[in-house]
Image 1: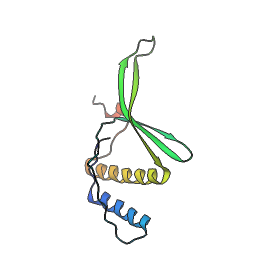
Image 2: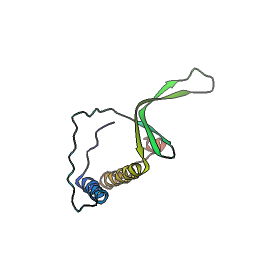
Image 3: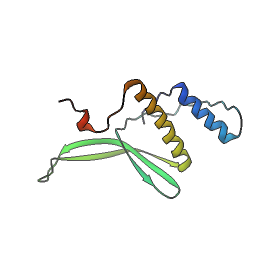
Image 4: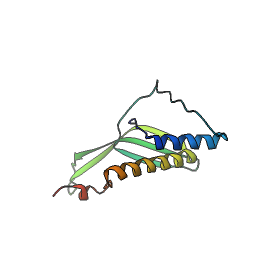
Length: 120
């Protein structure tokens, strides 16, 4: 997965969450990146279960289809799987929501509909 730069606001939120979980007023977080690997993903697939959420990350690739009446075939090549409990998934969702909101506040709304993004 690609490295994500976090703003001071996002770091503070994570530290506050850690303090709440630990039951202390202040917690110092040290990030050890010595064994980190970085990959790129342009797609993901969530797989929920009763205990955890599995997130598959990978690359969507488009190929011409060999079938009649089908113009293209998209292949999702899964490269990484992250498994997390629902508590961690909720914290991730909140953190990502905050980061995207900050980005949109600075650069404008992110349009997810590719047809609307296409310049005429």
